[in-house]
Image (cartoon, rainbow, N blue to C red; front, side):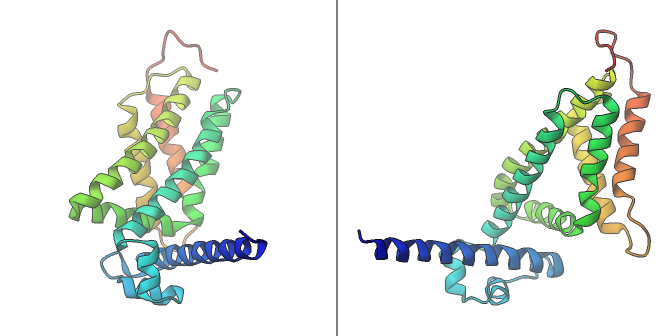
Length: 213
């Protein structure tokens, strides 16, 4: 294979990747603005500046784009959570401070909270999508649960409920606040979530076998 052919092939691969990224970006924007049901394949393709054929060259259906958005975002958040969970030197106050800082992202990026609700609504309506959705979302929920377990462990307290259940509640709180908060007042999502965790920790029973950090 000549050098020229290699460059042409690389160029086609780069072009396809660029097309795919634009389609994902356009879909995210439209899903937030009009909802999943209110957005068509043609809408996504036109918003990105492509034909429907270009869409089908990258995704088999509209659900596949929604799933790709989910996979990317949860992977990014899992890395951020790992950075908090993985630091064994952090005290309980440092963990809570790191959690509150992490929660600030919900104040800066409310679009993801809106998309999360779109994902959940579509999963309720589409059994086939629900199966794929659950695979990624439950794994992500377990990462949040691990953060909760660590936080209680560092405080020398016993987790007062099933950790994944608390994780689900924490995530629902964040997304709900992001959607309902008005732009007319300062966002308080991070502070509210931190208060939620601190209140649970304060009221939890002491773990006699573990000394607080």
